[in-house]
Length: 418
Image (cartoon, rainbow, N blue to C red; front, side, top):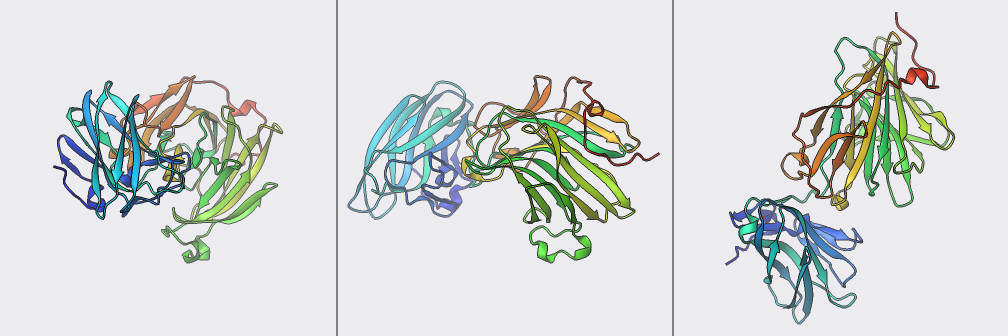
């Protein structure tokens, strides 16, 4: 007999060692991510017709059989025909509507191989007919032992990072990094040059729009609303390139934001350069330069004067982020290579070591996140429910290229400090 739990309790419930309840709110929709309402409180509602399918993804540690049941409420006097597919096995049922939620049995499926599997629910009903509201998918059987599903409503892939160690005594006046996006799902941000006050990279914002983004944080501790930040703590715009938008940002700290709408290409190497020029003991100008593949020239995205600073770049890192969670089932992967720093006395040093880290989502909820070395470059991969796992803090070393930015034509760099 299945336990009846509220959707909220289901968010973190494993009922027994052999029975797993997976909240409806953790499922993904295809092809229209907005085609059905998904919420932590109500599960999946307003699901009509057969245009949108619902899918859960989980990692099975053992092979064997599972029995799949769906906790579902179909409107009274209606019949809903549904099909559940696991691998190449599909089972269909007809559900009679009634006043209360019912538990629908789809029968037994074989998990023939360990690893990630999808459980895809489709409607066989007519257009605009209600398919029913889903509370949870319930699995039982020997193959559920040790199985891992994300049981929280956050559906983003885990954010993943590369940290580049630099000796404390080194004063960094410029940070150079090459980056290649290998996958391009919507709502992806591949960030090449990050430091203690900002970040610089490229984003997929819509099917038709991509951006090059450069942002610098304010001083202070305000996380949400820039209107609450005193003028003395705000970064101020110094200059920006042609066609570059500049403004504010909040909700992740506050600061100055800039972006260029530019259709960067997947599989094409992109080049980024950040510079830091202290102008007095308490202010530094941070600038972001992007090498445009179409014109073969560097352009300034923007530069910002940061208060309560007066120092160079530190805390260097790169990352990859799925910033909207409706498509965290898609793989995001990018290459990060040929990292160099320029010291304040004008020397260029190559960075060949990076350490892996991830956000809290990657700790227990989404384990499909890893890094490595490929084609002589670091890579970050996350999302997609694919096999691959890297322990937090693991260091990697890539082969040196010897291709110093000193041998390239670059924008004007901060002056050398003796």
